[in-house]
Length: 180
Image 1 (spheres, rainbow, N blue to C red):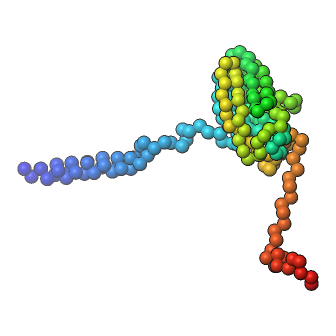
Image 2 (cartoon, rainbow, N blue to C red; image 1 turned 120 degrees about the horizontal axis):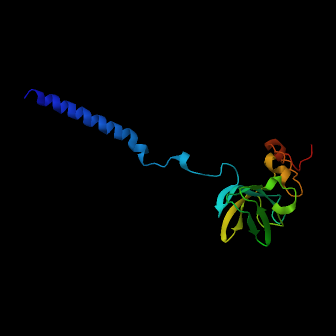
Image 3 (cartoon, rainbow, N blue to C red; image 1 turned 180 degrees about the horizontal axis):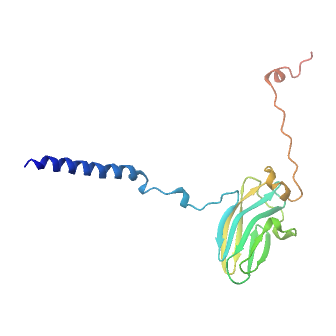
């Protein structure tokens, strides 16, 4: 009977080791892993409509009521050509994408990616409806302006940054209206 305490010690040590392993892994065993989440790594949206993958889709405009230009890429993953229709308010753009090809809006020099006056200001979201074959989806697409240098060349009509207003110091503010 001298071996009973030894077995209890071994059992307790084994149980402690199991609990320690569970304690270490228990915090992350049921947690979502951030690396498994797909997201838009840039400013635009990442969505799919039928066989078309929309990647980094956004609109560039100078202000509300002005034209907006679509940026991003539409990829046709099917083995036949598709027609992509994009509707915004009262404006429609239609793009034909060949089988297993992509359409990069910023590479197009014609007006296929320009939407007439949009009612959303830069910094807001614009409801765009995307239709491919018989599938339709509506997405909120970000509207940006040329504040970020990488988007300036895409602003319809050009972009002229407004100079910052000069800061008024306390001393300058006190003396206004007084003669010296």
